[in-house]
Image (tube, rainbow over all chains, first blue to last red):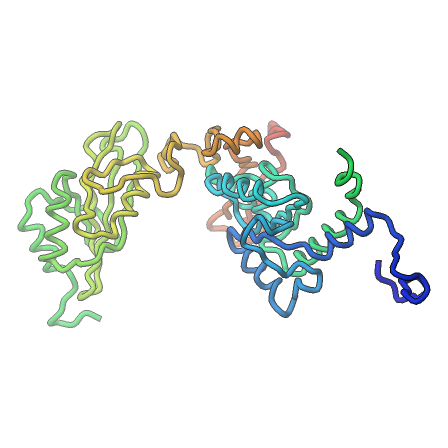
Length: 169
Length: 213
């Protein structure tokens, strides 16, 4: 979207106050660069999630630094940790309270598959109750892996037909 | 190190056993241990706490000796003396094997409250006199007690605690895929390649049956 080639960028002196683009491109550009995470920190993956927000890894470079602890203000739920059956219903209820459009990142082995917890108490993958967009492997994943997931989610959102979904009945 | 003036709890335990004839010795590899009748637990623990110096309840747990054994359930208390730095183990068998119960000791140690709730949750032992005997780990209405011997580690199919979420997602508790697990290293193996869990045949899953040898 952003190019160093000045011929391709917007020049207000020539073109006035009008930009011509596709609605999808504009909407997705806005969405991808301000994905506010809902940190669903359930276990040790949440520690890595904190590191991602700190200065060394700095998720702010991708516009996702605004951790909202209210589901109503967030766009992407990062499920970081072991989801027990007791917690699963709460996770789903929080997801239901998020305003659309919303996405889910399953961070780490536990959130993706249950991980090493082959047990009566642990949900074997959060995708049984939520539509997961990106899975991250690792136990726990490196912070870079979460950044990679954010980038991949941005790529995925950029491919979405957002305008059709918004403006069609 | 215990000094001559302050020997470890030997004399206190001996005096305790002499005073209460219903206390029996219990085989133990480490700390002094005794078996006591369930109905006398509050009295005996009170005596241990106030007269024998075991002032701290270090742990409260239970054992399931499996179906058929009697007593099937044994509640185990670990008491600690903060003055002598020594433990005593007190075990009491639950008289009823099908509806096990034990007197609560929350009046002696308030900290026993959640321990007893956990034992109730995991083993189904009711603690009589407990102020608030609810499940603590699993949710209200969960039909099983997971640490009982007959309960499989993988779990038993059960609906989710929240019926709305269960209806919305269609999810429920399913037995976890064990895939040849639980995944533990083989003990006593020097060769790490052979000791590791993956050295066992785990090529099969729930979908692909284990091949016959």
